[in-house]
Amino acid sequence: MKIPYLRPLVGMWRREATQYVRERSRLVASIVSPFMWIAIVGIGIERGLKPDLGSGLNYLDFIVPGIVAQALMFTTIFYGVYIVWDRKMDVLKAVLVTPVPRSIVFLGKVVGGATQAVVEGTLLLIISTFFVDILWLNVVPAVAVILLTAVLYTSFGLALGSFYESFEGFRITSTFIAFPMFFLSGALFPVVDLPTWLTWFTHVNPLTYSVDALRSLLVGGQQAFSYLTSFGVLAGYTALATLVGGWSFNRMEA
Amino acid sequence: MPAVRVDDARKVYGDPPEGVVAVDGVSFSVDEGEVFGLLGPNGAGKTSLIRILSTLTEATSGRAEVAGVDVGEDPRGVRERIGLVFQEPSLDNLLTGRENLELSAALYDVSRRQTRERIDELLDLMDLAGRGDDPVKQYSGGMKRRLEIARGLLHDPEVLFLDEPTLGLDPQTRERLWAYIRSLREEGTTVLMTTHYMDEADALCDRVAVIDQGQIQALDDPEALKRELGGTVVHLRALGTSEDELAQAPGVEDVQAEGEGTFVVQLAGEVAQLPAFLRTLDEVDHLEVTTPTLQDVFLSLTGRHLRQGEAEGDGWTEDYQRMKRAE
Ligand SMILES: Nc1ncnc2c1ncn2[C@@H]1O[C@H](COP(=O)(O)OP(=O)(O)OP(=O)(O)O)[C@@H](O)[C@H]1O
Ligand SMILES: [Mg+2]
Image (cartoon, rainbow over all chains, first blue to last red; front, side):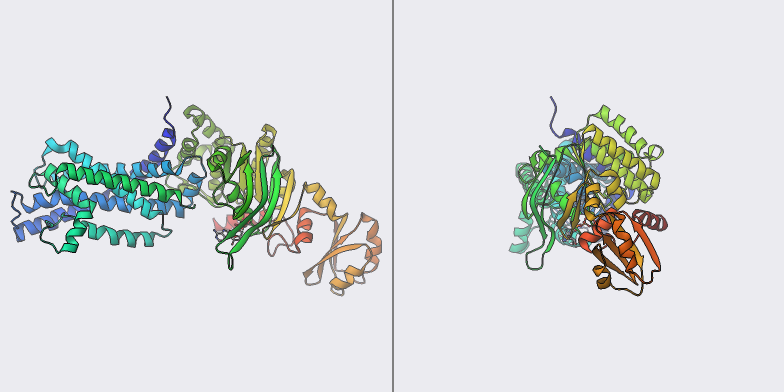
């Protein structure tokens, strides 16, 4: 049996993958920033402030999974810039004039972005072993969290990007959205005893659930939410983001 | 069943009061296997019409069918049957030429085996055989254009839209593309192309629609268009005369003042009228008698040259030289 639109999907994925392989700076850039967060902020705070986090974790243990999750979020939200790019370079027109449905065009881009995120995530896990002891036994569910997070934020970034015609506009908006999500996700500090409105934000912030699940999977320690809750919330958000993404690609004019 | 049918199509960009009317009530149909030309100056609405027919934009009103499929009702059905070569470059510069074609083949679900053959064949046709594995960003403007045309032909569409296909091609490739378009017609492919080159429309098209300001000014085969215009066209320079004076002369149908004492005079009938007309002139610096070209047809229909500041020549040569200089 022939799976409909598999060939277009693979074709689009290959295009994204080829670009990724050719532009090696993309990979380097996506590794350097989290490395600095861990090596400079992580070590600096661990040595300088020696925070007591309870649950037997030192600050490096605490920050490494958080930084892995936020790095994935940033890369994948910013992946939305490639739909802005495709439109600007008029490559999008050439795709939209083919019989491939918009939903498949969207899916092709999501799979492309998620692939890059998984490559980045794997490298970050390897780099993490220089700083903390990773619980390799949990690597499969950890990769599942990475994948869900990647698909969620790639979809979100692409949906956002489909509304922009300039790189600048997209970059400003996505940065404006990504930073609060990062700071209020529990990646850098435990999000407890915050004012009500911030607590409210941390609870609707999907990254909170990625960070929480990834932390207990990778280095152990106390969870704020059960795995069931985290996976459930992430899956729900991912479903929502892909629906919104599909819709936003549908209304896009080349 | 016509290959393309357009019925009172209108396209307005933006909202009514200050919106731009790009296509203003256009109707025509193109037969299967016909090469049909849309000839018109910049901003005439040619690309807008192609965007409607290729489902890239919706008409503000009116209907259009391509290969028997309504563009509004079943856009995907239309997209399955058409190929389109855009006016502006739309290639992925990070990929090689071959990879661009492979992507397109995948999007159109051309079988893998066929893809290889077709790509080699088309790279050869477009004189890119040796450069297929180079990144597109290393291509010259003309090479990109050729690759783009190859991409439009790759999946053997029923109806092929070519928006200014020969812009920036060198003379040999242009000739080769013309020959290829003629061979497509032999195979029964319908081609709808836009151009602002008279010689191209003349050489290739079975029928030509002259379009200006979103409206079709005339539609016929190139010979009939020229015949309709009348027998003789006189280009002359005479400082001592005026447009009105010339219009009074015997046998004159139409006069266009070109400035600096230059006029294009259209005489009714064949050369028989010429001696009587010439006797009315006192002093002439320059005189040229021709049979009408599509250029003259256009001029008489719109009172303007196809391209600003171009009185003679086919325009394509100048464009080509300009491109070469820019490279
Ligand atoms: N996306 C758009 N938004 C607003 N106006 C547009 C848009 N596209 C085209 N127009 C306007 O519509 C008119 C027709 O443009 P169109 O591109 O169809 O002309 P054309 O015949 O293809 O010209 P050219 O020979 O320069 O390619 C022009 O006045 C143009 O400014
Ligand atoms: Mg145009």
